[in-house]
Length: 398
Image 1 (spheres, rainbow, N blue to C red):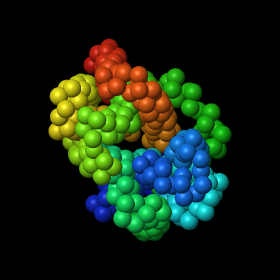
Image 2: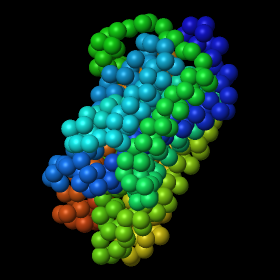
Image 3: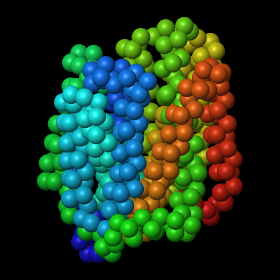
Image 4: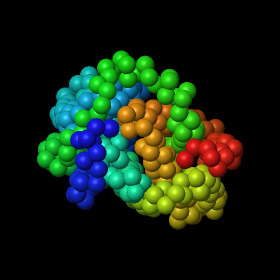
């Protein structure tokens, strides 16, 4: 790490870290606004109902492309500039989506704002770089808390804003926020110029080598993929259960349930503090076990017709997923700073793949076996991760 990098450690203000957390949450939320708005968007832009889910899929495609093509550049080009360009890209895509007159225009906009939604994966390594080693877990935890807040609040906020002002207002407000953050972070952040100056192709070619040579990365992927997959499985299937005859909630009721589940974001800050005190291994085990407990509580809640117990299971699951994400990223960010952005890109891309698998199987599982099938699937993959964690020796991955 060069001298400029060293001097930036510990010099950032609380406001700077707050803005990074806000950028991470607002950027991640962009991927999820469209999920509860598929029907009104499709009707307005003339998209056939059978193809309406493409509204969400195209944003995810743009996001994956951004993970592979943008996030690794954090190891090669000046980071403040990179973060600003990503925010501007997201703002442009959201503005285009807000005014889209037709399906093809909205499709292109979804890819663009999905591409720009990787702002969180640029902001988290930046926060890690700005923090001192002694406070790195706490700082990363706070920014990841922002990220998880954005993911968890995006759906209920989009539903409520669209209810009052229409779906286009959701994208327009987010576009304004992206542009404001681009300006604010430009003023607040120090420059960070990584060493090396590798080309994008060289960065991409290094991915297989990193997977082969970094055991901490492999371990953390193996823990977080099933965690995030089960998280997405839960939140994709639970609206179907809540809207069914057992609970009979309308869209507003489902939005309020999602707000209750958002209490899980507090796990990020707690996990950061535990990690800074050297308890990452214990915390990882507790996170995996707590996720199993969350699914079990939710299953009992459904069996008893108790929305409160189902919500408690959601909170426990969300706490576990958010905490384990912090433990994973903190462990990776304690490795070589020269490969930090690529480690983060691989880690996020792989556990989002787990999320994609979770969303893909949620509806078929629910149709075939109801909430029982969803619960069994979630618990089985989490127990598999917990079993693998049990093989980690005390001298193993952090």
